[in-house]
Image (cartoon, rainbow, N blue to C red; front, side):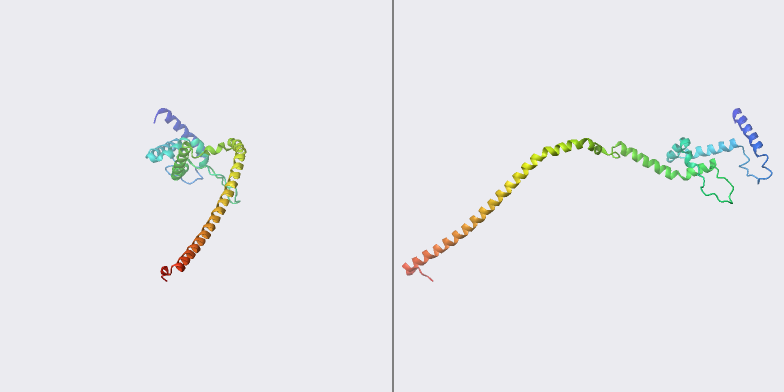
Length: 212
């Protein structure tokens, strides 16, 4: 330990001694880990956190979370309980540094999942999928659409007139075809009767032609 660090450690130990002297006789015996100075415990905690962050490439999200700890620190603070039981006189303090580190480690999967989702959102945003695309221009195109509808009305009216004329023409054509079909049927009947009459007359004139 360097000289400045040693001096700081001694000062912190002295302050801890002054603050805890009055309560040493009433509190339970502390563990060996709690007897260490505050600076040493903080240093050990920081070393443990560095080892966790350097464990592998899968800790990128956790590393970013710790790098922005000042912004993320409110997420690690337990909000006060709104209901206060009369028998409970203790106040809810903030989490200890060790508890906060444990909370970060437990939330590692959620942090990684959130980071992956944010990367996917950024990727979709770069591809222009997240935005509305050309739909945002519909307000600007509404005026042109209304003008186009007005311009199309005369053309649509002429198309309706042509459709009506075409329908009438097809109806007349159907009537003509039906009439011609009836005429051909009648002609066929007349020709058949004429052939039968000619055959009957020829047989009456020349009985040898009658083979019936």
